[in-house]
Image 1 (cartoon, one colour):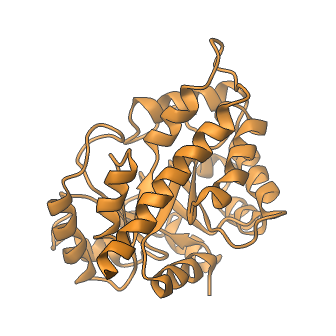
Image 2: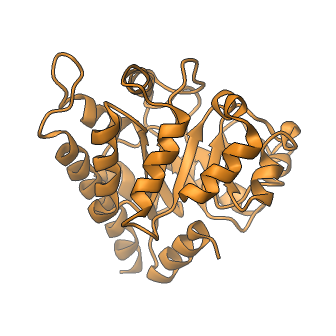
Length: 278
């Protein structure tokens, strides 16, 4: 059983949703970014998405775009992102890590070499936002063969005709984008999210994680009553940014600010299932 499957099985046994946290690898620098990622499991993150910085991202809102630029300016590369995962795995063996980003850095790195290095580093899955199902031979199928989950995005515009194609080779979990547009642009409509999760689950037995627009513990709690996991990204990136100095350098409060917000979000997620059970 993969780490992702094991974590969702454990969450199901606990009767609660999970918290998936997203941060850009290398933001604002490698050392600080690693310290933050190492702090996430203890703060309450159940799964971790690490964004791979890229100069021309898709779907990222201003906050995550800025994080990517900070990371690139500090020298972050795909190779360093894999080194970060490797360093994380020294002490943390169980928390799943999913790399999220565009195909270009992987293509430049070399698909076969990347998949081998990612698996050896301790990566559990990939979310590649610009490879549709029609291009599964390019990366999805090789990734599955290498033992890495390939997580796909479903959106409010993914209708029942398109959904089977999206889900065909998806593994790990389905990431439902709760709003149309870029990250951090709006807050999700809980009633629409509930209907969407129900519809997706008619087509798959995979867990459904919901993200885009979740910024507070209350929003996380509401989504957790409907989904198998709640994904939070832009709010964490903004919490990080707010602690930086005038030159975008980390300050003594940077790691703690992110960990504190994760703890608050985790408390919201964990309370949702308890309330439902009562």
